[in-house]
Length: 444
Image 1 (cartoon, rainbow, N blue to C red):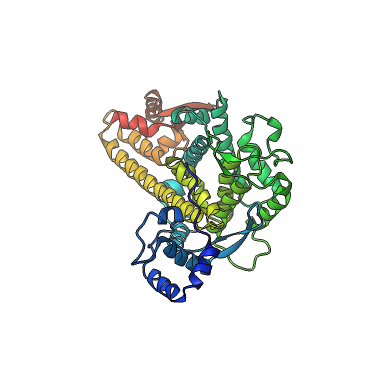
Image 2: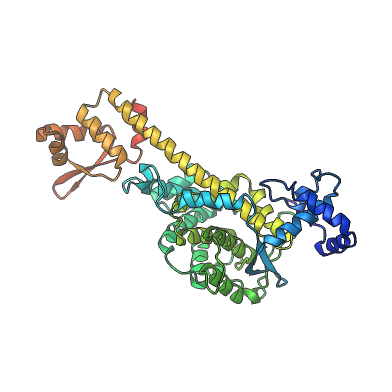
C-alpha cells in the first residue's frame, strides 16, 4: 500500500483564488452543479478525473473543499500537532445511517432463527467465531477456518500463536456482550486489550497496559515505509480520558449519531495506538462495545472484520485519506458505514437462506421412509428447537402411544445418530445432535 498524494495546500489556493475574484465566482457556479454524486473523493482519486467544463483539477478540488468545510463538525480528537479532527455528513452517510438504524437496532423484524431463544445462540456463536477468525487474520494469524472452528466448538487448547489469537478474540467478543451496559473507562479498555492479547505478545508484561515513555511505535509495512506515527506515550493518560468522555457522551452540547460515535471511537483508538501490540483488535472490539452499548443489538451477530479482510488495503487507505486531508474523518466514516451496511445485509441474506433451507429440509422429511410419522414429527420439532430435551414419557404423551412404542422410536433415532441419549437420574433424556440438519440432508 502506498501513501496517497497529499492535496494542494488549501491556504495557498485561497490566496490564489482571491486574486482572481471573477474566476472564483465561475469556479463555485460550475462545481455546485457538477459535484460527484455519492462519492467522497480524496485528491488522490480526484486528480485522475476530468474536471467540469474548463476548470483545472486544482480549482475543482478547491471548490469541493470549501463546500466540505462549510458543513464539517469538530470532534474532541486531536492529532499529534494538536489540530482537531472533523467530519461531515456528506452523501451517502445519512442514507446509510438510516439503513443501519432500521436494520440493526430497535424492534426490527428478523426471521425466527434469530429471535427464537432455542436457535439464536447457534447464529450468535457462529458470528462470534467468524469475527474472531477474521479479526485475527487481519493481524497476521494463519490457520484454516475448519481448524479454528473445531478448536472453539470443542473447547480444546490452542496449539500455536495463531490459534491463541483467535481464541482470545472469541472470548473478547463474548465478554463484550456482557459489558455492553458498562460505561467506558480506562479499566474497561485495558480489560479488552488484556483479553485479545493474552499469551500472544513478545513482551507479556505489556498485556492490559498502555505504552510507557520510551515504548514508541509506528504503523509501517514489511519494507519499512511508515504510514502513521502515533502520539507519544506521555500523552496517553489524557488522551484515553478524553476518549472515554467522548464514548460516554460527556460534556457535549451537540447531538452525534451513535453509529458515527462508534466509528470514530474505532478510529480514535487506532490513531492513538496506545498499546505495543493488539491495537487493531482492541479498536474493533471497542467499536462492537459501543454499538451494543447504544442499542444496536444485531451487531452482535455480524462480522465487520470479515468484510474488511476481503479488501484490507481499503481499510488502511481510509485511515490515510483522513490523515493526509486535514484530519477529515468523513473518509473513514464513509468506508466504515459501507462495511456495516454490507455486514448487516449479509446477515439478513444468510438467515433468510438458512430459513429456506430449514423449510425445505422439513418438507423433505416426509420422504425419509425409514422414519415413521412420529419420528419425523419429533425431528421436525428438533430442527427448530435444538436445545430441546425429549423423554420417553413426553414422546408417548405427544403421540398417545404405548411406552414401549415411544421407547423404540427414540432409541432408533439415537442409533441412527440423530439424537444423543443419556440418563438423568433413572430417566433417559434425548437431545438433537449438533449437526442434525447435515445428517438429515444425507438421508434425503
